[in-house]
Image (tube, rainbow, N blue to C red; front, side):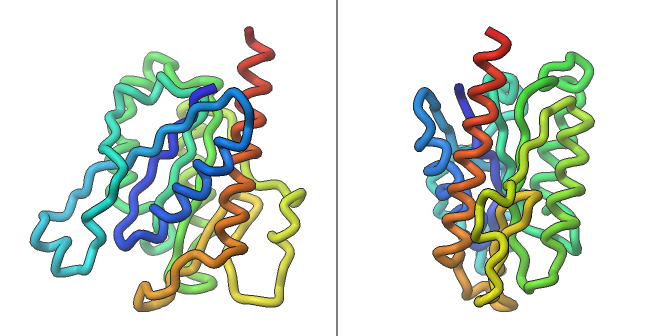
Length: 202
């Protein structure tokens, strides 16, 4: 079972969650995971002025390679309660794959980051999931078997629609231990479901 973690990260928060999701995928025997990111749309000078993290290890993905994976787990920060333009631009190029039914039956999942506790995590996750449903993907979230989703003793992300983190208004807060563990749990769950579907269709 081959999984792609496909993300966009301006300041490194989604990048950190992407690595955690990938770690969870690797815990499932028989899996291979690849981490890639979508292209930056900001000119380099503008990105530098904005303090964007430009030294990310993940290579740039192409739309054409998406059918090579059994599961695609998308990470995008929130922009006014929806996915970032960089991710939207990438997904907008999948029309040819839609026409060919190339992603039908693949497993899809989403994770996100917001500046504030109520900054649009769930709307971003759900609206991104809608894109994957149009492509015919099988949606997998983060079920409440992950007990950290019910914790209320600290401010943190984490939803049944996918993992999430809170970056803080100035971006200084990186994912907490609980948020990292929820992301790992999502990776494990997605990998397990994708593996079961792949075996069932063999």
